[in-house]
Length: 293
Length: 314
Image 1: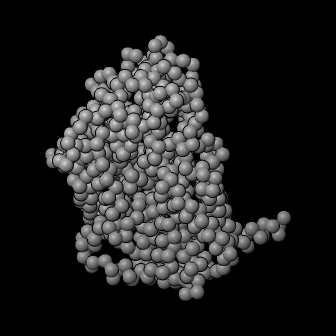
Image 2: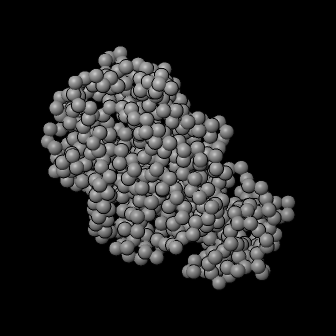
Image 3: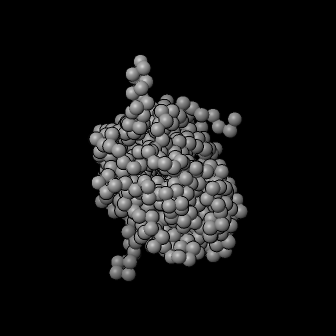
């Protein structure tokens, strides 16, 4: 026992350094594990941030291995054998300090890794984030897919027709136009698309939560998907309302559904709303890549 | 109670926590590696030689350093920590620290893109953001010239500066063969230090981000006197990255141009996670004073700038 305590005193600097390396190694393993398993795509924008998470994991691993190899090497920074007071930027070699640092650094991380189901679970969270009312927020994505081409000097102004839309949007075997929730949301801000889509049978996939605002809230649900700029924390729901004849059918909050019905564009709260008058609503699997980056 | 928390919301906070952490890990890592190499390889005298002798001019240059040394708000903290310990004047360091996340090419291009792709005044918003941020950071830098280091820096950092001032710092310069070991050991130490503050800040941010309803802020958009402090508070809690915050600001249609600018300027300088990161360099009291001062300064400047409010930026 005495030998052990003596060792603890003797190798205090090395043990404290080792604790820091353990913390970095845990971060490295988590980053690399998330990258290799693809979990990282449920958290951050894949295009460029995924590669940065790989680089961070590899970098931390390399730094940990290097410092582990040089755990014992002495250099001025850690020597403490010079003759002035030690009030400058030296290594902290207290077990309590380094232990607490390691705890704060890794315990919340490990808890989150073990608990997280890689998606939002609570309807309250989605509601708190607020449903976007601004159709321009999806314009950069949707305009490439379905927006009405702008007339130019070279090209005469033409009337956009259903045939034009059908060139870029497929129909399901049941004859529904298969659109995404963000595309349907966008149409609420585009008069030409509304003219073409109003009364058409459409189909979309998304998650549902109860509608809580408006006089028709008892007969409505909200179909939404999450749009992300950088990481899941900044996710913003875009949605369309689902209108039922009476009370909405049985469902769980946040459940995924394939919904089909007729498009309506009534004026509510001073602006056009995209609403699906639901004919059919069936549970469906969560699609791969449920976040819209 | 203002809001009831469900257990699923705790889960969602952990999910959001992990997402910010995965996003920020690279920037913290790269910042701490740069910090290690600065400590091992950058002679203190070089800083003295590079900066203008005139302190006011040095502060003004500090505000523009981000254009040539672009670093985001997470990565800059360990770098500044080391530069201050190496003897970079505090006034210049703070000016650089506050300005760099905004006055850098990546942020300026993303601000331009976020507003332009909505058919709005991208050039006007991006240039106003950079210009006002520069003005605010230089003012803060000039004020810092009159503040004593003892009241600002954490004792550990203050001691390193003191050792440098008293000429004792050279005792700790690593031998040539040991420089790489020293650099990477310092990088490790800085990483673990900064990561600890980052974890605490991100955990709080993720939690508040999920439980505070966004629709609370919409009724306050009607006039700048309420809209500006509201959006600055939102920026503080949301703790968005300066390279992507413009996309969020651009979508806040109910708010004026002045309020959006306040969001875009205050957020990268001071947010919840930065309060904890800054605490690895500065005394907590100073961080709180800095937060309050920036809140008032940015608010007043943006309110005045609102006179030039551009309808296209709404």
